[in-house]
Image 1 (cartoon, rainbow, N blue to C red):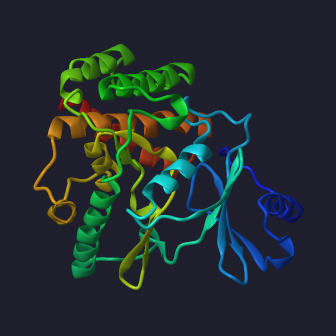
Image 2: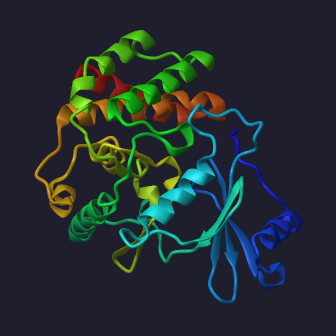
Length: 303
């Protein structure tokens, strides 16, 4: 199950025409299947391939923050241009995004180890440091409305997520009110974050492109928000500890461990709760769910 939607060739041609492109020039539409939320096609064209991203059907169940994500992703790429290797937006509609195709394939799809991995982790840290040079004027998810305080924005993010858990009847390792209180108890720490930084927040290896031993792109910026740069290190170290190579490339020796734990709780909550609206089932998803819950319980204990 899932909430992806698909178009036939005629539907894709119409959408491409609406984006100002000539469907007669298309050599191929190839669906890229690594993503789990949107439907993505690679469009083969003589002058360079394009990527087409389709939002889920509006009637599909989603989490509270998962609306207007096409607009958020469009804004992310516009803001990150010149600071990180991201696609260029060709056309953005209400529920679709057409962008340039970057070279490379996902890190996740490749086997990279040893010195190559060490070098790429350091390069990734430097790229993320460049991305975090992009700052804004307020905090939060663009599609949810911004605010002048990071603590206010993040508490609203947590509240939306816990409300989703209730709405979808998702059991959590602790009561929602107890989890919320843990965040409230740390609001003073979050208030030390004064500058809204552009945070991708989904930089696991599936969203990082590599070609010929070099990082060539950061993609899928739809989960981006303006917030604490420490939050970025959650997906960069998914289910693992932060590595020295990444930190060295970023230009720091460490990050605030409590803030990191707070944001890990947030991401693991998302991964726990989104299973319900997306209808994930089967042994593979059950195994991932157990892993996520184990890490969620560990991070909650740190707060």
